[in-house]
Amino acid sequence: MHALSAADILHVWEVGRGQSHVERAVTLLERACPETDRAALVHLPLGVRDRLLLEVRAGVLGEALEATAVCPACDERLEFRLAIGDLLGGESTGGVAQTCNPSSAREGTEFEMAVAGYELRFRLLDSVDLLAAAACPDAEAARSTLVARCLLAARRSGDEVAAADLPPEVVAALAERLAESDAQIETMIDLTCPVCAGTCRAELDLASFVWEEIRGQALRLLEDVDALARAYGWSEAEILALGTERRRLYVERVL
Image (cartoon, rainbow, N blue to C red; front, side, top):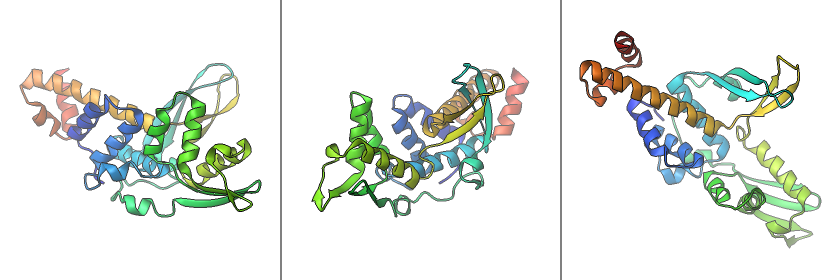
């Protein structure tokens, strides 16, 4: 994996504009991992995918992350600041990961569990599964699709059981075990409202969040290109080739 250049960021933004949020995440990793086929990236476990997205984001915008949520009790807008290392279990990214190895990432992605007399074998979810769920007409159908796709085998008293025939409590236990087995798949932030003192947990959709930040960076780059091209007659390629600090100083001089 390599750090994204200014040209990379604009490329990702341009391609991702017409894609779903799931496809955008893969497009971003595809640009950061040019040695890895997209076909392999779409099968990364979602937790691994999101970890890599955070590392890419750190390479572009640093480790400090700022986000907002809304207090469910009083509708106050809550702002919070995190370090990406905290989201990665206390590990610093060091700017950007050195490798993106789908083969090693898929190792240990199958699990077994027993619940309520059922024996289940399942695998971790990936981007292909999310795309299949997104095509469903409603949330219930999407949930059923994800269960059917991740479930490799289900037995009760030695007899095979179809995913559609699993009772709700077994499906709920499977969903909980999926979240436990794939670190980073669900990011929850504990917050306290400064107005009503209420507490809440906000879920941070990492794939969507990182895309919005990359999108914002791309729009800022376009503004820089417009300003410097008008002032100096430079081409887009010449402007994007400038280092971040040099480009910023030039922009400050012409604005």
